[in-house]
Image (cartoon, rainbow, N blue to C red; front, top):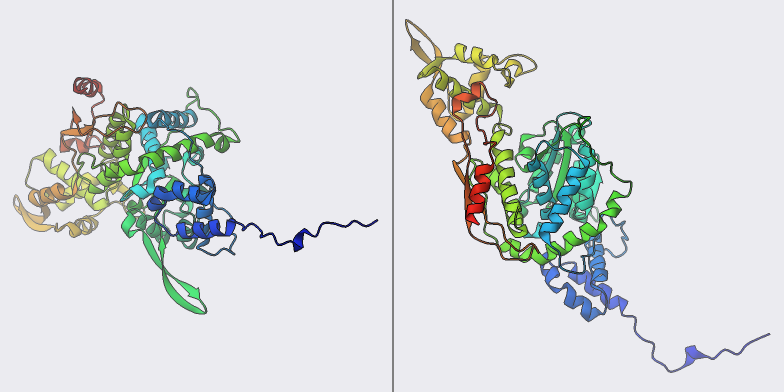
Amino acid sequence: MTFDWPNALETDAVPIADPRPDAEARAKQLALLPRLEYEQCRESEAKDLGIRVSALDKAVVRHRESGGNDDADQLQLVEVTEPWPGPVSGCDLAEDIRRALFAHVVFPSEADADAATLWLIGAWLMDAWRLWPKLLIQSPEKRCGKSTLLEVVEAHACRPMMTANITAAALFRVIETARPTLLIDEADRFLRDNEQANGIINAGHTRRTATVIRTVEVNGTHEARKFSVWGAQAIACIGRQMDTLEDRAIRIGLRRRLASESVSALPVDYFEQRAIVRQKLQRWAADNSRRIGDLDLVPPACGNDRAQDNWAPLFRIATLLGDPWPERVAAAYLLKEAVDEDRDERDGVVAIRDLMALFEQHACERLQSSELVAWLVQMEDRPWGELKQGRPITAISLARLLKPFGIKPRQMKFGTYGAKGYQRSEIRDAYDRYCATMPDRVETPKPTNDTSGLGHAQPETCTYQVSVSPASNALTNKESFEVSDDASGFRDDWRDFQ
């Protein structure tokens, strides 16, 4: 049996043009715009193209990741989050993240969770910052929950990408391609002595200089190409990392859980469960990206310009969130940057600090090299007893440590005999230059009363006292500076100010 079908294909009707090529071409053009400029026009562009904003976002991201190569069909490396449809309370969102952090790991102090919360929020605003610190998660030993914390961070991060190892060659390429929040676990196994990878990560600290230059093969020839390494990184490790990396990081500590302490196990689908939170973070960041860039707010001076720069974005975020976050960020800043003051210092600076303490203790203007070395070796909380390959510091190695600071041992008269020694005035000069001190009073921004996260930042400030111990206490206490554990004065000042 045969059928006579209407010969519709031979009619004179003009077929409707497929709008998708125009939309794809426009998405490819939009992918070349700076991200903040695209953010300003994405809604109007989507309306003109007759598509949803989320669909346009995905197309733009695809073109960015493929470098304009439509045939690449690259695997989507990171999640593309659609923003929450309505306004979001920034303070409520931050509290939710903070509770999630405390629910699954044990922190040494609330300051660690507060700093991690603000860092997570700020990583959604990368295009608003001049510089952005790393989040360095450090545990003293294994089984302290660093991998668990990294999973919690992943569930709240912008475009997260988790890895337990990465080469330097892959590092800059994946940052250029996907612009992820890169989450690196087990860094103590491969990153600590990897100077090339550390150089790439360090280069991404400041936005303007966050590039590396590598050669790529093009048609059989090698050409120089600039790669962007501007991106957020959370790095988890046991113990220390290179001092240059630690100097560019907000450091978060962890503790092994006691039997009396309880935490919740992470569900298998924890990342999926927190999808709504990521959508709200995306929305809050979009609503506040302009205003947070306009805030001219820096933390109080702490004697360490790099630390002050690292914490400046967190202070701005806390100001927009409102009460109680300005108080929390100020307390965290003091605790993390003042108490363990020699944590980022090279051996030479630590030596200057200890020598100054010895001069203060003995109230003299000159001391013999041999006496100083003997006293240094006896300090149980210092590295001098096993400075090099388990051997104690010597007069020669002490002189080498101090030489870059313009301090040299001199032949001096001690009673009836002469010996090599050091003058207090030279140690004092180096101490004033290189050993950071905290101010007696610090100022913090007044929290906004608008819990929506959309209110205007207030310029007023409040103050509270920080007690500073004398330098001579360094002989008995590892920390030369102590933050008073009586917070009542701070709370009283805050209430009076409001």
